[in-house]
Image (cartoon, rainbow, N blue to C red):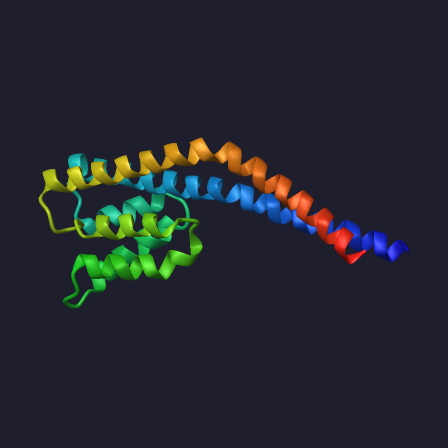
Length: 173
């Protein structure tokens, strides 16, 4: 009887943990998007004021932001210095693919990051700044929609975790 009770508590706790993790996922996505927005802000200042080459700007960005994007910018800068005929866009895609499983972004977020990479090192200063503004506007829109749905989804996932755990215990008992 005691082992059954301990098993029931473990099942409920596991399901609750799953519910809380699912509730926190959008927060992780929001944090990742904020980190990339920070990288874009730093890139804007590197383009406007420092007039740094792309590989130097990426190294400076990587030093000032957190994971997973610091790794992306570090790998991208390293690949730029070691490139052998590849375009900046191809190197950007390689850097994104190498770190895709380390971020909590959705597929449409990755597509936006890939389209941002099309402008890296290709356009003049003014058009590069416009591309950064476009990507920043996308991030702001996504952040607004995450904020609108976060409270509703967090509560739902938490309750589903608890209720799912209780239902599983009742079925198995």
